[in-house]
Length: 338
Image (cartoon, rainbow, N blue to C red; front, side, top):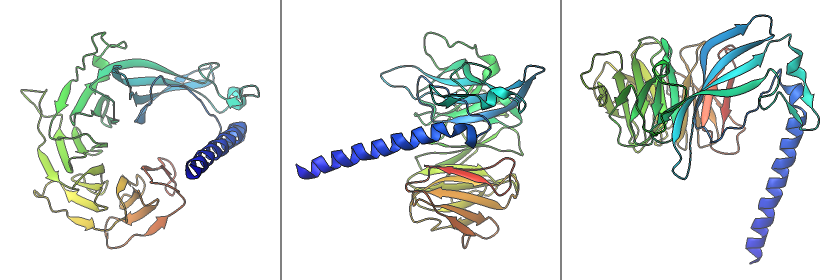
């Protein structure tokens, strides 16, 4: 039909525009960034987080950092929680400005001093929806699985090459959710407290430092119905070690006191956005400031001392905003993505 042909034409035109924009961006990489390192993963990763450690290579002009990654495989392939080593050139290293005109790339796919290398794979129960390290003990990593279980791994207790049987053997299994999700946050003030939100509409908190007779079926010490039908994200506030924020499909932003039982939040913005809220982040520099990102294509700035109105609405996205995160170094800078 004519309508069908027009749709195909529009799709092809959009693909050509995207390809041209990508080509322009790649040519300008040396002028936009101090360094850009590219690496093709075997499977997509739904999660990424820098580990806090940094190793200097004295006299070699580069440092080594590490990343937490996961897999989202298909066709019955095994999934893994992964640790990757990232070699980054130092400021004085001329490698950072090298640009290959033939490949139109800066940095490289594992050549030279700039590279990314997966150094450990741990068998995982389904795709890794999200993985986060415990700030007080970065060797301990929590993951969200499609079964609804939250899995705890101490990567120092697992081999670099996974067992060929593909069986997932976490150091602890946390129960409490009936569906999968993405919300996951360690308490920055109290070691071992882990907060989670999932598609079952519940928020759960566990203390992984407590003594348990059965580490394969740990129930939460707090579980509440936060956002029916689904909790999209959660985060602890820095203003109080017992208060956390949650957002969900009901378009609400809620603040909860984990010391107060019940399903009633301490504060709530009932219409934080006009669509689902996908992400929430507290400022590491100004603890009473929060950001929320929504399917309504906006990011909102909030003061947790008064949720009756937004401080500001940031526009510019042309689709649902899925993630928002503050800069760790610059108090007024944040990034969002769709």
